[in-house]
Image 1: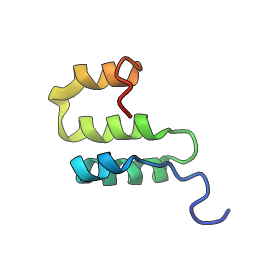
Image 2: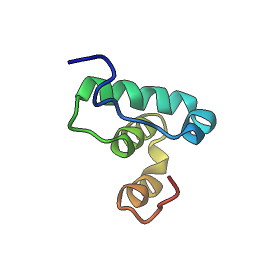
Image 3: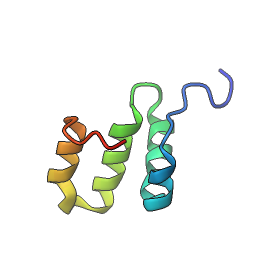
Image 4: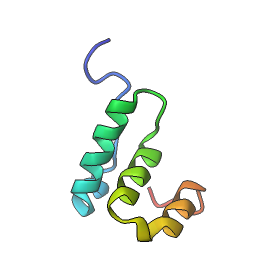
Amino acid sequence: MAAGVDRVQFPLTRWILAPRTTWRARRLAADFGAGIDARTAWVMARLARHPEEYDYAMTHLDGEDQTD
């Protein structure tokens, strides 16, 4: 498999507004493989650092927040 194939993509706004979370999500997605999408990886990384955002994260994953 070539490098970069099936790599999840994160919007530039995520990199600008939350670079640490986005970097961690990118690593999580790379470690997990093709079975995880960018949104799920980002939420998992965000909750690892900010568990108090659980309610927002679940709303985000449910698709009620379509700001991406």
